[in-house]
Length: 381
Ligand SMILES: *[C@@H]1O[C@H](CO)[C@@H](O)[C@H](O)[C@H]1NC(C)=O
Ligand SMILES: *[C@@H]1O[C@H](CO)[C@@H](O)[C@H](O)[C@H]1NC(C)=O
Ligand SMILES: *[C@@H]1O[C@H](CO)[C@@H](O)[C@H](O)[C@H]1NC(C)=O
Image 1 (cartoon, protein in one colour):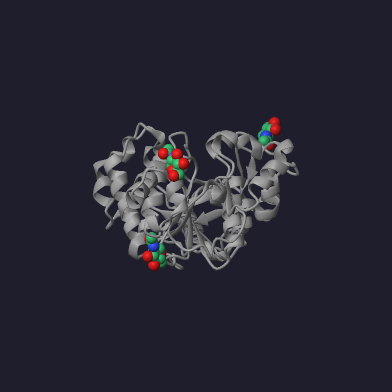
Image 2 (tube, rainbow, N blue to C red):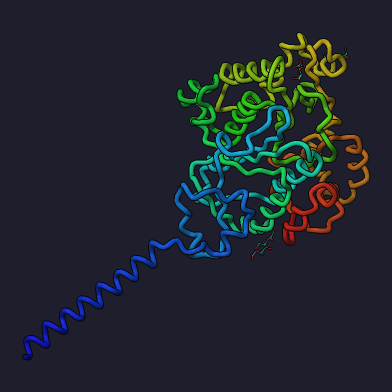
């Protein structure tokens, strides 16, 4: 009897354990709806789950944004009617958390201003990527609160966030072989040189308008005929704002830029592979080294247009503080009143915070040309 009770009890216990385990398994496998945080980003950016979810998304109140590959996701960039930004910080050695998707308020401002003034163009923000999914960082360097910034730019239907894998992006282009040789990765200025590499590659792939992340677009650029760049000084053209047509001579110029990039690449010199590339290529096309001759004579450059400083770089890099100084407001606004865009020289200016409501020129441009990012910035822009 005692033995029987014992075995019955044991069986009952085993049975109960089995039931509990089964319920556990069913609960775990069943695809419960994801937390509301995941859905707080607009649906268009949250693709079908083919890649693993970032682990932090389930335990912390962070939003997860899935970035689809620019080569595959719809809509694809329309040749000649697309604007491109590149974010390359995943190659920053100081960047320890590659799962975190970062955007400063100023970068969001550049993106918003491009989308706002060019509603017929599609704006692609390409995050160079070594990971598949990202978590939005709520508070990067506490200059900005992230989710509201992403919400601000994604409230424009012509903004698309995409991921870009260097190797796949270069495949099938004249850069594929060169990339494999590895010189790029031995650069002393890796983040910056990858950014240089990509702007020419993007213009080769799609044509259209490339913009640096440290610009504010002030008016529509949709009607500017393709194939142009701007001068930043008497001796250099700049590579922060460039447009090349996707076909014909514009595409040939892009090919020349890729060729020049490879031939003259130097990982030890910061500016060698950005502005200097387009400068050398334009000098060949125009048959002169003289930048002011290039500007006044478009025929001479076979149709390639070199804008004077006023178009994009009205405030030169040595005067970058003028953007931040309320006493220079009038002077700076007057200087840029006919500009298409301003370039704010992030490498010098990034550590200079602006209190929201400031009366410096940069704050004024932001209020007007990227109102949502500006207001999402928090206390400082
Ligand atoms: C960042 O946070 C620290 C500590 O919370 C604060 O003292 C500082 O003022 C903040 N900086 C900015 C730019 O918001
Ligand atoms: C460039 O050409 C302009 C106009 O012909 C001339 O005034 C200027 O001195 C030239 N600059 C250089 C650096 O040769
Ligand atoms: C510029 O782009 C247009 C449009 O594709 C093309 O017809 C023209 O030949 C190009 N000109 C130059 C100089 O690249």
